[in-house]
Amino acid sequence: METARNLCREIGEGVKRLQTWEDLTKQQKYEQTKVSSDFQAALQEFQDLQRKALDKEKASVSAARAAHDSEHAHGHGEGGANQEQQQLLQQQELSHMAPQHEVDFQEALIIEREEEIRNIEQGVGDLNVLFRQVAHMVSEQDESIRTIAENVDNTYDSTMGAERETRQAARYQKSARNKSCCLLLILAVILTIVILAIVLG
Image (cartoon, rainbow, N blue to C red; front, side):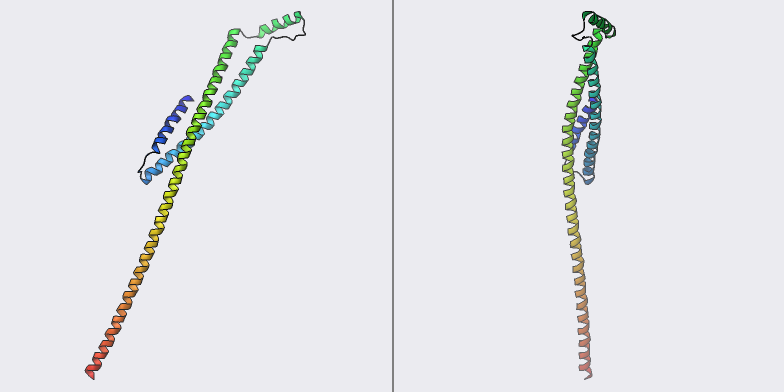
């Protein structure tokens, strides 16, 4: 578990360094965002597994601690019993009690597992900080991508508007040329008629 946590920290640091890269192509920007999102999802899954393992470990240690305390307290008779009864009870209980070295060993194991639980909790806390940092970076990337997309859309709209205006201007220019040609043709016909009238007159 500790090895996995260290690996997550190393990858997280690499992901944070990756976010500092600038002047990326569109494909590189997409891959940069995808790496961050994939790591965030994997980190979330690992955190869930850590919490489940931590809960099981706590339950196991609690049960072991309760059994140890019960066994350690075993053998204390009630104050109202007479001496013979107490001695008899003590003899019966001693026959069932574990040797002291085994009790000490179990106590040491419980303490070790409790220390391990504290280490896991510390690791979970560290990864929570890393998770928030990566989530913040992914959020910033999403915002940046949305801004870029909006700028692209605005540029596209402006380009399409300019193209429409250019086509409309071209139509107006073509129409004006057609009208000019018609006027010239009419003038030519009128001039021809006038010349013929003069010649024939």
